[in-house]
Amino acid sequence: MTDTPASPPLRLFNSLTRRLETFEPVHPGEARVYSCGPTVYNYPHIGNMRAYVFADTLGRTLSFKGYKLTHVINITDVGHLTDDADAGEDKLEKAAAEKAQSIWDIARHYTEAYWADVKALNIRGPMKAGKPEAAHWSIATDYVPQMIEFAKAIADKHCYELDSGLYFDTSTVADYGRLARHATDEGESRIDPVDGKRHPADFAIWRKTPPGETRQMEWDSPWGKGAPGWHLECSVMSEALLGFPFDIHTGGIDHREIHHPNEIAQNQARSCSTDSGARIWMHNNFLVERSGKMSKSAGEFLRLQLLIDKGYHPLAYRLMCLQAHYRSELEFSWEGLGAALTRLKRLVMAVQRTKEAATLSEWKPFKKYLRSPGMVDDYIDSINETDEWFDFTGILGEFDDAISNDLNTASAFPTSEKLALTKLVEEAVTDPFIQLDNRLRLIATMDQIFGLRLLELDRIDLRIRPKTATITESEIEAILTRRKEARAAKDFATSDKLRDELIAAGVEVMDGDPLGWDWRLEA
Picture (cartoon, helix red, strand yellow):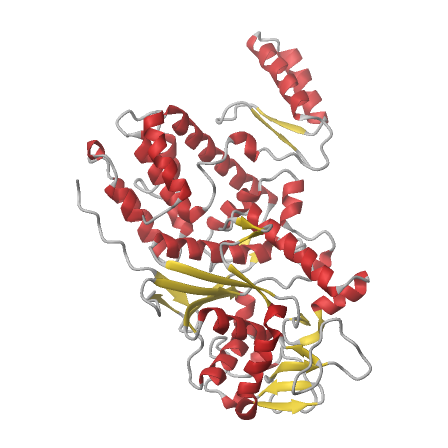
């Protein structure tokens, strides 16, 4: 048996220092991560969900590297204003007023919608009481008493009170805004101007309920009845659940300019130090959609359910995200999503052929992995000696190199002779010298990071029926069967007539499909 090569260190891009850094956990053997979660006033759009695919990929990588993972994702159900720059009305209060519903019902409905998208995208975690438990899901309103105590602890040295609430004085902490890399002007131009603020960048810790108004969500505090500021929530929950300092804080790149600098300022005040709270700050870039439908104000904005309604499996979107580096902009297009679905179908079908070719004795030991995934070294060590000639460690080594280089999932897909995942999968049946159980083990080890459910899905699972379709699948299959028979008999007139019948019903017939005879319903 060949020696197992040492796994390369995990290097991550730290937005705070703007450089790649080797991950060194605060607590040996553990990884503690906090991710900014959704504000549950509306459905998340697919750009929002890219952030959680990224955070899930990070968590999967840390588990792959052998760390005991604690991952906190918050649910913001109070305090987030309609403008991320600390301006406007509370998003939840505004949505409740517009819909004439209880704010608690609004929050519950959109929280459950978010969890449904999390499940559909295979963001890690078993289901418990209807919600995924991969991470600790912290609800902001559950922590309001701790928020008040946090604010009281920093108020004397770092805050001042105005008629509208308690404000954080950004001049009281060192190097405010260093995460955003703006001295003052760029960031301050986006902050809500409030009469009496000492500095334009100062932000609300506690917002008083205006005289004559009643909020659905409000609490008593030393500064009057009101609600916490959005920025306070993440500082309080990350400290309560992970402790200061913790390892990694993630979020969308838009949080890098205001929300996260304000979190850092609060963390510095709380710890009486220059520490930012997290050792590494990571940010995914935007998903760009040229038609403008990424905005929730655009009516039928691009949410995951819309993709499903149009006939695309949600994991095709996950694959689309993985094919770009998380720090790169990703342009969304229906053509790109369709290409990702085709690629996913190729992988799933090839794995299916491999499973069918494997004997029961080869496949049975591997099922244990699906129940309790472990470190990659365990699988390298368990490879049969008869397969030593095949460079398993080279494949996993190159894969590990790519993932360890700032989660470079884009290069972990087919890009080289050794690493080509498609090649690894598709040659499994045709190459008699490669033991299928070991091949499946390698594929699943990679999918531990990708999260594409390659060993669970089959081709039919990827065929999603568009919401507007009227023809049934059995009708399609019956017509296709007749068409195949006509083509076999060289009755091309009948074949063309049946094809036109399918096209009129919205069915795209893929003749010459290298995956085999296939069809797709057009939305």
